Length: 176
Ligand SMILES: [Zn+2]
Image (cartoon, rainbow, N blue to C red; front, top):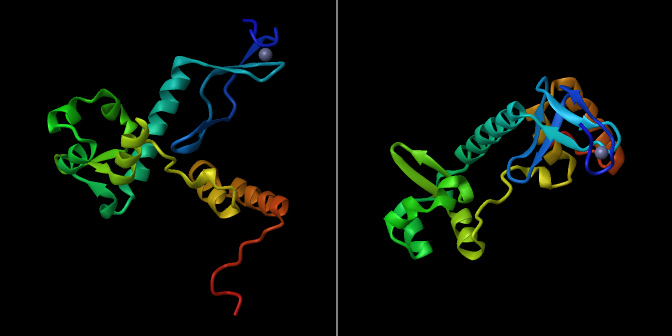
């Protein structure tokens, strides 16, 4: 298969692939087949790869949202009121159902992340980054790395990040 961008050819690969998701941050996939252009590096996903990525995004999103403090959530009733729609309209809203507003279930009820509802009301898309990876400070990157790497790779990453930033975070309380 030829690459439309550069005319190179796609080569099968199942190496580690880092997918950058704007909401949950970087996702590392390993051992799943995909194709990569041998010239420009353009990537073609296989359906299997897409499935894996989608599943990880869902899990990660769930994990992030469920770790938010309870005060960050509002009920469906409050959400409908904020959006100026009926409860039925809220339940039927396709974009919201699809996850354009961060939400989770509490018992049998769906609850919504208030910040996300407010953003949705303003722009029609309430998804904001749940991962701190968008922050460039080493601590934030390390936190994200922990989710996708083994310990040695994390240590290596921390080291190179600190070197590059000339910034070495101090352990709290140790400097006394
Ligand atoms: Zn190419």
